[in-house]
Image (tube, rainbow, N blue to C red; front, side, top):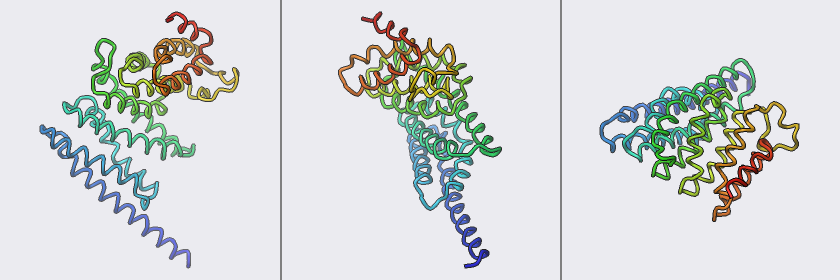
Length: 288
């Protein structure tokens, strides 16, 4: 087979992939028309189909990663509206589907495309643009979600709390340290409430979230697998105080009746003690 014939086959392959993506994008836009309907039933039907379109694009093995990247970049313009929907829609079911969509979007585009992009002019532009996209979603969703925290407690819909915290866990690695630091008070309020939530799974995710917040403040320090003290070189000074504070929050979960909750809390505490030293243990002693 000659080079010209090979190139023609490759071009036809890309054309077929793009045709699939164009068709999926057309389906997405058709469903999007009802996303602002006054009828919750129409909004619900629309967001469910939009989630389905996204899932099909991710799962279709006949579409190359380059075509998927272009498809997702075209969808990115809709994330702001869906971030608002995730916290403000009157229907809890619509909110949950909006969170599901954003989670799938961030998980695939962030982990499978952005994180695997090599450092280059084009790669760095992609990463910078994705960082701004994630910070935009955070800025829309988190403050609105916190308005629903009353008397230090998350809202009553357990599944939405869990889905939202899981979305935040996906977003955090892509936020800049300065952005996380600027929004620390919001994250702190959310984390404090989630550690005391009545839903066990929310408490478990809270441990992972607390570790990720600390890691996002210090992206160049290997907090998840620190081997020795020198690994903490470059740690921000205020991170020690953050570790001590988070140790206080997780204290009730160290004695939780479920082993999974205790294990996740102990794993978080191990990292906090490595960062914050004996101050973390003092916090535990003060609570006895």
